Image (cartoon, rainbow, N blue to C red):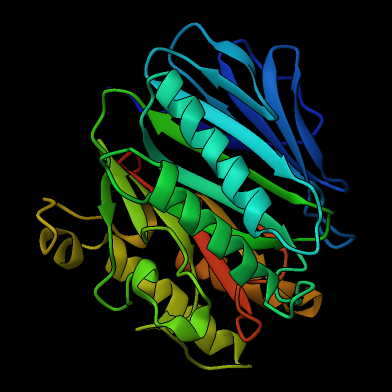
Length: 327
C-alpha cells in the first residue's frame, strides 16, 4: 500500500489535483484554510537569508476536503491530513488540549485512527508564559493531557517535530492512516521523550523518535541529545555530529532489529529533509555539513528557528525509504 508522498516546491507554485495538503513556510502565520480544495497552513518560518517554500503532500486517489471546528482536513481512502492553529496566549495548556482533542475526535469520526507523523510550530518556544513556565513545556502539558484523555489510537504516540516559529500562534499539522499499521520506533541512544524526568516540565513531550509505515520511516526532529541530556552546548559542529549520529543509529539495522523490525536504512536513504538552525550566521556551515552527510540528490530545506531547548543549535528531520537503493 503506497504511503503519501511529500515534496518541497516554490511557495507560489500551483498544486495538482491529487494534493492532500500545502504547508507554506513563508513570511506570515495564520489559521488554516482551504484554497482551491487544498488544506493550506501558512507558517512564519523564513528570513532574508533563505527563500520560503511549500511542502506538498499528495494522496493516492480522489481527495475529499473539509472543516471540523477550527481544523481543516483532506483525505483519500487511505490517509488523512489535518491542520490547526492555536492563537497566541499567555498560557497554552488548555487551548492545546482542546485543539488536540478536536484533532483526535476528527480522526475517530473519519475512521483514520492511527496518527503517524505530527509537526508543531510554537512561538517564543524558549520564552516564559504568564506563569513563568517555558512556553514549550506549557504546550507539552496540554498535548500530553489530550493524548492521555482523548487519543484512542492503538498505535501509540507518533513521530513528531516541535520547533519555534517567528509568527504568532501555534500552527500544527499531522498525517493519519486507516488500515496500515504504523510502528513507532525509539532510539537506544536516547531516553524515550515520553519518559523524560520531571526536570523537563510538568508533562513529558508526547512523541516517538520515528514511525515506520510500510517501507518508509518518518524521522522526528532530532538534536544533540544523548539519554535525556543536551550535549556539546555552544558547539555547532559537535551538536551536528551527535544529531546525525542519532539519526543514523535510529534508522540503522541494529536499532530496528532490536525492535523486531527487519532491515535498516542509512543516511543516504534520507530525503525530504528539514534542517532547523538557531543562528543566521551558522547557515553556511550547516549547509556544508548537510551536503556532506546526505545523498547528493536529497531534497533539503534550511529553516532558521528556535529549537525546543535553549541550549540546542540545530535539529534535523527527514523521511527514510528504499527509493534510492538503485543509486
